[in-house]
Length: 248
Image (cartoon, rainbow, N blue to C red; front, side):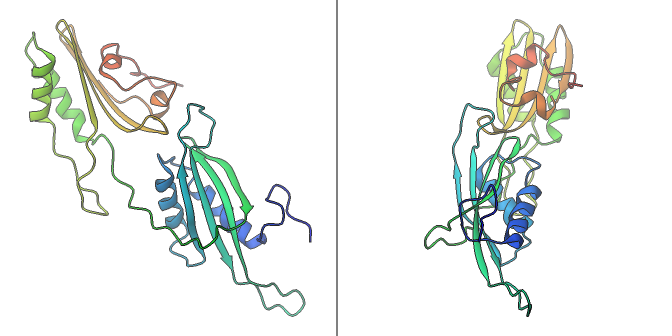
């Protein structure tokens, strides 16, 4: 029987397993995730707990090539077949290689031989790593209230005392991961950046604030503006007041 074009030569599978693998891959294409484990968790969620679907492999391979696959998964899909008298179909278990990166789906599912003795993976819950909304108002208040002449250490201390506590993850009730703080003082000007996410794979959440010439500004660059190869989420970027206006 001829193999489906574009899939691994004669690897097990049928039209139903093909559709299931593609449906799950499309469902987790957006929003992009920051690791293979995060994509795997989303895939399991997209399958709604079906015992006919599993992720049996996940692997990260960070790359400087913005088009490269950085998160590799293998789906395993079971189809029970049909008992149609004229066109019966035998049960089939099919596996599919799928590739993602910080933009989303890069390589659509393609049939492959299932790994020997592979068991369904249960990746850990996706940790909350973001710059909480409450940081915006607190950052503005700190920058406005700083003395005219301030050191990096004094600014960092004021931020540590004033930023709100991190919210709890609604699923795990664990405290989220703290964003990375960066502070720079040039003369009387102060720049601050809070960054969450992984620069190697994307998904960056960025909050910037600066006090320049006595004027305070706090803003969040758009997701597209802080992807690899674009603006860096740093205090120096805040001092330059870059990324204030979203791209059209």
